[in-house]
Image 1 (tube, rainbow, N blue to C red):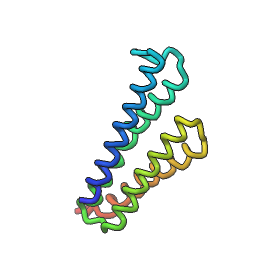
Image 2: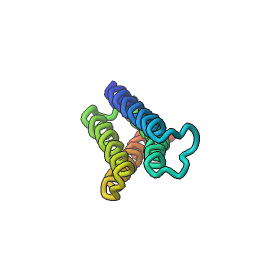
Image 3: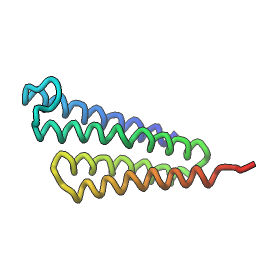
Length: 125
């Protein structure tokens, strides 16, 4: 299964985002909340943003692959999601609106295209 590979890669990226939050918490000695620390706020936001969008995108991609979406399309969508999430993280952590826009557009396109693929494959009885 192609999407399983992207799910695994995105899982590693999620762990990276988690460790980034831990690293900032340790460096700033903040165990709970963010104490108004902008660096910690950005790290937490990047982590949370990932969890807000990646699960639904992966579910849609899995279903599209399961319903027979051609492998090259699965790779395109999975790759776009992975690259989009990297850009999204860079945009949040480095305060780059351009990177955030690229990440958001890539993520939304994957979700929208996958949803349309699934709707196009539904048999109405």
